[in-house]
Amino acid sequence: MALSEASLKEQIATLDHPLLKVPVEHLNRTFRATYKLFDNELKEVTQKIVSLSTSNDNNENHIKATLAGLLDTLKSLQTQLEISAKEEHTIMECLLQRIDHVKAGENASSESDIKLWCKKRLDRILIDYLLREGRYETAEQYAKAKDLEILVDINMFETCRRVESALRSHHCEAALEWCNRHEVRLTKLKSTLEFKIRLQEYIELVRKGSRAEAVLYSQKHLAKFADRHLKEIQEAMALLVYSSDPDARAYKFYFTEERWEDLIKQFRRNNFVMNSLAAQSLLKITLQNGLSVLKSPKCYDPEHKNPDCPVCSDAMNLLAKDLPSALHTNSRLVCGISGDIMDEHNPPMALPNGRVYGLTALKKMGAETGMLTCPRTKSTFQLNEMERVYIM
Image 1 (cartoon, rainbow, N blue to C red):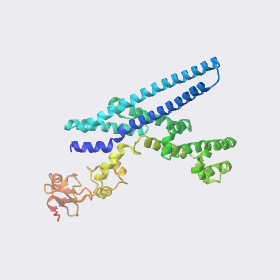
Image 2 (cartoon, one colour):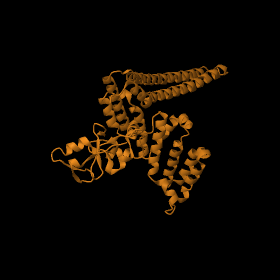
Image 3 (tube, helix red, strand yellow):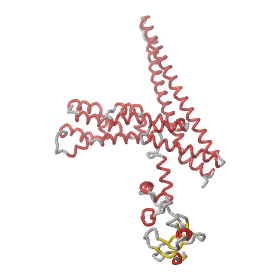
């Protein structure tokens, strides 16, 4: 079925929101970081100038050294501002090209233009899925082959890959640096990621037997979280006593590999929220929407599976398992042999064993021998034994 222009516009509004939101969020963070840097440096320079002007120090060398230091600070600030301006310009170029891409979809009127735009979106969705699954090299090659680098967020996922790789190697520096860089936003989200990372570093010190160092670390980095995580901190402090006790099963979880995987998952969730990305890939979301429309209880009955129904296939059957079934106010009968709809042109016919199939498929089956074989029970009947079924 051809996709209409109106349907495409509805889909763009629903599915392509992150396409524009991600660069907007990136631009916003870059601008705020630049503004904060500029404001802090300028305040410091202003204070030094005021202090110098009101000082009674007439030492010419000291004044020259102070002014030279201020000049170096301003030059360094200028360099940093130029770097930030280039980064903002790059983000703006990306955003403008994405806006043009969305406008092209909204203005597509011919069937060929709509198909071409939808093909590009399918490519974007597949690349997004590959990036989320950690197939970074494949995603990069795919994007380059399709000339879609500007429409996918490879750089954002590259940062994600670097942090996740470090956490898998049991190193927390990259994750803590990321938390520090996004401290304000994470605080607004009430994220516990930094606390969990700090707690994990403390646990690693206990694991190595560095108890004194672990105590100092907890005083420096965990104490500030006591107002929100006091109970967890108290339980963690008990590791100093029970970590070497083989019977202390309640504390064994602290030393499992699962904790590192949990950190990776939490980092990924926080990163997606900060960049206005859905927790699930667009591929999974669109597949689930489509399967939910087609799903019926019969899709999970081995005797009534339709070979032409996507939900009845083994792979999609598992994916649609927890989805709601479609609500159809008007039922349709489907032939279990051909998958065709049974109506006045292909009336339903009942075999002596009570199984119902479409007339077209049964005629085709018995065209040569005049015999019919029920595909479910394997029973055989003569062609003239079938009877028309009438539905009131």
